[in-house]
Image (cartoon, rainbow, N blue to C red):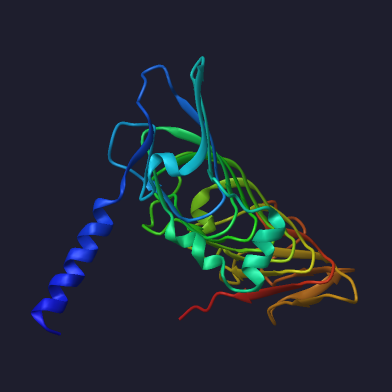
Length: 297
């Protein structure tokens, strides 16, 4: 590679980074102990992770402030800060157009818009996240999240605890809804969630719960015409799988699960007197549910 080409590439990279600038922020407030954030973006490439500033929320983008429609509201009631941030194109696509974009392969246009959201490590959040088209990477490492609701229209979302730092508080509910897109949830055990619910329409959902943290409780889910993939922990964790299926669907379980009742399967570590079991309670219509066991050396 010639020096001239290298110089051009460096210049292009610097220009791209120079375009990333702060768009919205919510300053820290000593009165606030809890942040209720509703964040909705209809297109683009979005990331969420812990930031290093004292601000409760900071949003950067490569977009010019006047080039997109938005709603940005902040209210403090008692010790709770309510933030509502909706980001839309001026020529926003309806859901029908979103489906068309995905089917015919031009939905990558949305990834030209970049949104970077940073949260405060010292706060506790309720997160209500909704994505239209594009991509999103959500790293919740080291962030306190008490409730999480994530909904994708046809966006592809990767969410998890990628720095091996778990939730800094106990999570009550983890809820994911997939319409046409795909969601991959990694290291779900680090969420420390009491309740987990997942609903899949036509898209794909991966739940990876194969981490080292011991999980108990119930995972409730439904699959329409899409696919759900579950990576289970090692077979020493007591696990029960209940699946209400139909002749149009396909369900695949690991070899170490045996039928204990109609539509009910358990592994060898499970016994009826165990209160610390992991229980799946699932419905599937026309789609597929595949369980895979974690491989141990």
